[in-house]
Image 1 (cartoon, rainbow, N blue to C red):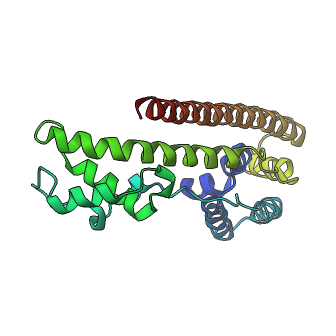
Image 2 (image 1 turned 180 degrees about the vertical axis):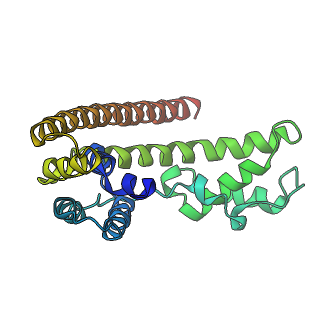
Length: 234
């Protein structure tokens, strides 16, 4: 069997899906690709077919990637003309008309702010850069916090279910890869590999959850500290 096809349909395929800590639409696309690869293999693989069918039934996360204004700002629509160092009078007026409350700044205006800040040089136009940064920073912090909160919400429901057929599918693949092994050795090795994969995914999920919780706490504290500083300077 071709090595690339064997990798796509063999024991590594089963273990890769078992280790996943999140189930997304991209994961569903990956499942479809593995199903096509399995159909291209001459050998009959009923256990892996069932495994992939069960993978296909796992619901993906209901939340997508957060659309941060800083990412939108990469669009040419939100960038200033190259070589324009200082802010123009029209840009200064636009900045003055922005709401003081970051929560009231629209996504479009936030993206324009991010694009504006990215084109200013702190060396060539320090005053313009500082002005835009002072307006953009609290808006950025707000969206950073929202993005972190969404990442945390995705992780909080816990790990996706492991298809019940994982063990038999893995044993089928291992038997194909090691035809000289007795059935008892294949079954024992399959259970060992599945236990290791479960430990890896549990550790990965715990690590990601801790990082997400820490990010939310730090960003929320920074935002609260900024509000206090603004009130004290008012």
